[in-house]
Length: 199
Image (cartoon, rainbow, N blue to C red; front, side, top):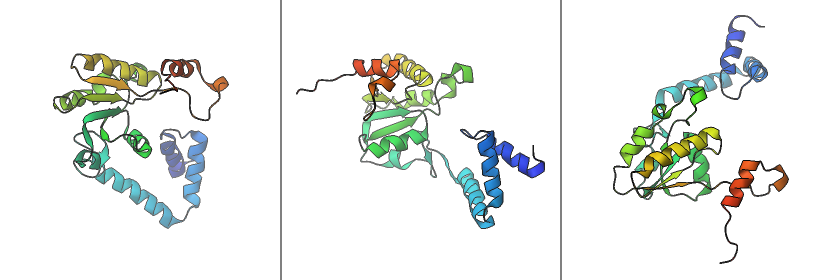
C-alpha cells in the first residue's frame, strides 16, 4: 500500500478496537493534513495518559492515584458492590445517578475462544474484598452477551457458597423500542423480568 512511516501509522491505528483498514487510512491522512500543534497535543495526551493513569488498588477503576475517588468517597454505600467488565462501564452507570455503592472492575469477561478465563480477571481480588463483613450484596452488571452471561453465571456459582446476596441487572426491552425488532433472548428476558403495574 504505502511505504515507511505512513504505512506504519496506518498499521498501528488499525490495531485499535473498532478501527478497520479504511478508518485507519482516513485517520492517518487526517493526521498528515492536521495542524502540527494539534497533533503534538494529541501525542502528548497519549504519552501522559500512559505515564500517569493506573488502576485503583481496591476496585481496578482507572485513576491517577493509588485509590480512585469512588473508593475514597465516604458517602458511598459500602454494603453493595457493582461488578462491571471495564472502567468505562462505571461512567455509564454513574450517569444514571441510580447507584450509590462501590464498584469492582473485572478487566474483561470470560471468553474461552479469546483465551480469557476466570484467572485472567480480577475475580480473586473480588473474593478478597468480600472478606469485609460490611458487604451484603454483589450486583453483577456484565454485558448481556455470551461472554457477559458466562461471567455472571460463573460469579453467581462461585459466590453462592459465601452467603452474600448476588443479583444481576435486569434486561429487556429498551424504552422507545419496537417488539418486532427485539431478539428472542431480549424478549424472553423481558417476560421473565415483568413487574406489576398496579400497587
